[in-house]
Length: 307
Image (cartoon, rainbow, N blue to C red; front, side):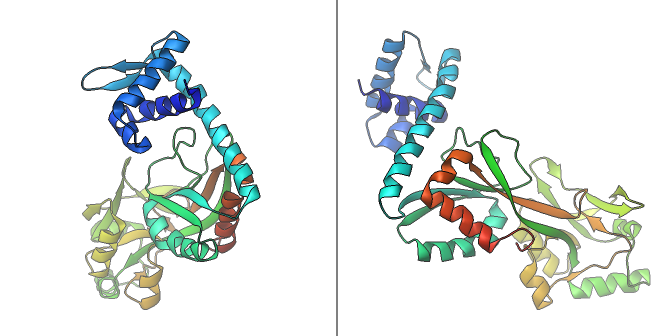
């Protein structure tokens, strides 16, 4: 029995909960996946996978075994890749995960430059706001808001984005005329058309920093969405006020399609004025040349405070 291959089959079957999906990845029949895992179970003397006509899942011992297998296979893959790259040119696949909007608006142009310099490196990009588990996912580099406490994962501060409360120029002028003042107060916002971003955990609240304390602002949204582009379009159309990290609306602010709303006290959509962006990668993988060069390239182009 080719134990390494059997372990790889077991790992992906456990992650996908499917023989057929694992078989598609390895381009082999599902029966081959099942048979090799059966051989592995026979050698160990335990059942690793529960099988039924509709569902495949790991047993309790299978879950324990999986945790060890993941670490071993990851180290083996990293060792193979490290040696092969030290002997040759920068090539192969590089898997990068980034927050959806940040990835599309900020990271993508940087990676276009990277590809021109290293054309033999194939970038596999996943733009998603979901958390990344390096132990279970085939990800080399991730970019997320907020640091990470996961062991053996390096988190370097990449950039800082200010939150901007913006409106279309006609709407801002209309509200300033309505309230009879240029600078708005937090209590005015409850009487303004506002739009809120809906994250996975719920609506993103608005806050005011007054007397060194963050105070929640009451708003009555006319539009709620989990997509930034739809909110930006609505803001440009004058439908309401909205918060965005500055890199979401950099072009609109530069063109004058949107303007920042002057407020009496600092306001934010978090209990801090900035959104911190971090680049994350497993510590051991930084030794692999293509990963090191990509991390350094991104850091150079999006150094802290410049993103």
